[in-house]
Image (cartoon, rainbow over all chains, first blue to last red; front, side, top):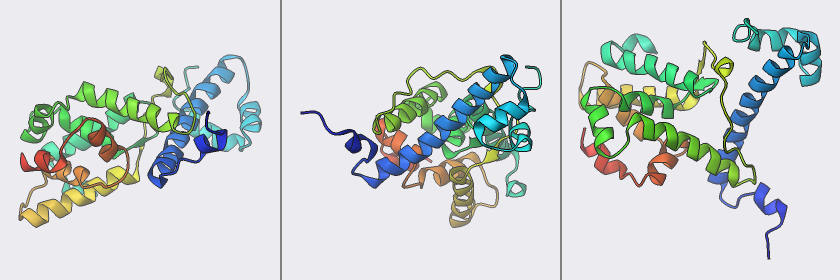
Length: 71
Length: 151
């Protein structure tokens, strides 16, 4: 019998659960980097990217403009 | 914090920053200090390499740990590539690295050393009980006491 999905999302050992929280934040960071870059390459404006991410234009620009200045 | 770190120790911290950037991390963490240490000619680097922790091996171990931790919550993060543009130029210092450097200062004091060297950073980083570094050491089968005994 396979375990229920809730078992996967809730490791029994807190060390595993907390480590997953850290890794998920890192994963989200990496995804954001990749997806913001992709959107800009596809012609999205900073304002559109910001709206899609649910943050202000200033926030997304401050976070990504420098590394993506050549995109 | 860095004014207390001179010479080799400062180089270790600077290199950790570029290791973190190369891995696409938005912060410098203790595991990046470990990779940096493993690449130095200092005895602390030799000690790491002698137990099999070459910089490349540690690089791979960090990625394996990331994938293993996410797999435990049902997420397959294998093959997630870090594009060149994801490599940020200005990273913040994460809590695990700051803690490791604070402990390096404590280790230097405890040993009565006036200068903070790579060996103190290694001792400081190895003291962590939770987080990526202790998980990697466990996964690689490293005996922490045996490793610190080499310093």
